[in-house]
Image (cartoon, rainbow, N blue to C red):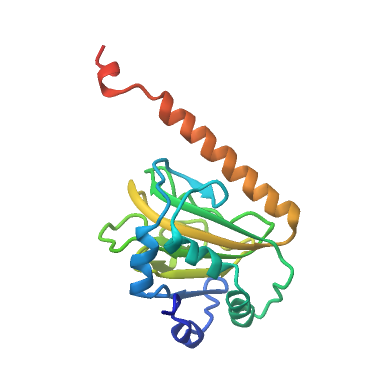
Length: 215
């Protein structure tokens, strides 16, 4: 069984409005999506977590291995007309979203291409839908991506690659994969997400329970 719908990916033209990007609905095939979600990491905290240190089953490992494959790299080299050979990669995973997430940003300078693959089975909320923006304005929308059903968005990072989403709280499964400029950038991404995850875990555990707050 094929994991990705490469035929649709290759047939989808690269858009340049508002910056170079491609959006592919159902990039992860439905049968594969079921297997990946069955073995998805159990993530109780909000924020993005480096793949290193997470525990998951073979269905999710299938996705991780595919992201690091030569086939995957070559497909994105061809789509974006950029040489990614020898470039380090980073993979982070999100399980839950908080109301304050989704602030507008462009991604860090060391990233070359950002790929987001959304894995929720369905999505009915108006919030949490990634918006590719023409300016630092959440309403200046060039494209919007429903974060579910194996949908993919990939974009070339630049100083104007603004993106964000309206507030949402709840389960929002997304894997972010990046090619970065060098090993130093790879280490920075890992340490930044590791620190953020540790702080959020400590804050969650330090939060008083409902019974304690009533005392």
